[in-house]
Length: 393
Ligand SMILES: Cc1ncc(COP(=O)(O)O)c(C=O)c1O
Picture 1 (tube, rainbow, N blue to C red):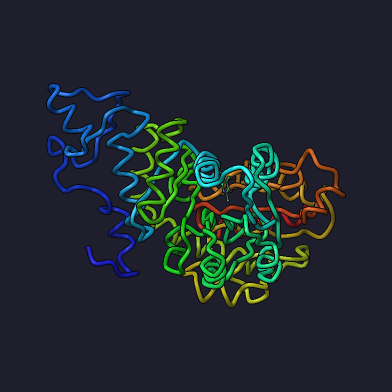
Picture 2: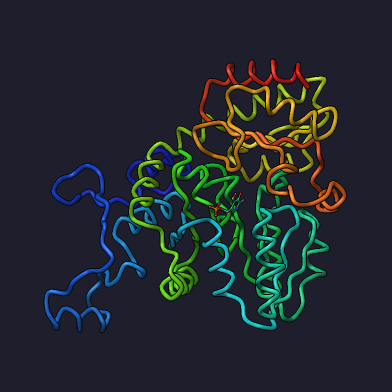
């Protein structure tokens, strides 16, 4: 298949799939097995010697998972992909596999809270130092690099403020200091942005979100050059955490409509962001597709669309946000994003609930912040719904 930017719909449907499907089934089956048998000792030896390419045991590999990995690699334009049981498994196993005691990681502050928690709590426990720098502050990033630094890790766009990093610049800093760069690109997806094209070493996705797309599975993906991804796959083989075959099937199925969903979610979020920006009861909207966003220019340069998450601040505090969230009729109050159903949440009452207002502010989370993850419902219905709910703020 020609690798041009415009065939993402074709890759969503056919990428990673062999045309010779078992028993002429049109969909690839779920391999519901924990192990694989060998015909005889000669086959076993051939496999052990690396002459026969096949699966051996379910913790190391599964054919349904392999098809999903192939499809994601085709979408991302990367050599290899390893799938995990969740986005967090993908992130934590990648970091555990790449880092050793005494080494150091630089990460950006505006990121999924559990990733920061893992680095600050668990990596530190194993003697790995962590420096946190603001997203977009490349001077701070370079100054934080020491002789022990092995990884720079960031999201782009970030959660929940949708900050967008200059990926070429980031990759350049990594190469200059011989440090591997990792981007959690969950909020962008390969429809909107392909970090490997900018020289980023590894891309991570919570495939739970847009890639699965239906709020019905948990999955995580690591993508990049084969030697790096193979080393992370080895960690998975030792520690477990491979995606199960049923979820892999759902992921393959969800990915068939990936390009269609992304096109719709990009367009809806842009319209919602523009509507919110013009509304008197909204004091600030964080969406890279808006000219008012501090990273709009770099977002336009490196992204095809800006994703389905719009964060905004309502006029008032925590209760004003709650009045809005309680008044909307279409979105569910739930964590997560990227699925066909719209979801809404107040970060102060969800991910950051156990922190005080002051502690939340220290990590940049304002009490009047609302995060809206658009689904694929009609844009006019979503906007009408927000309009009536904002009257109750
Ligand atoms: C940006 C980002 N990365 C990683 C994760 C973790 O993914 P999962 O929930 O699939 O473990 C999330 C989850 O919300 C996320 O938003």
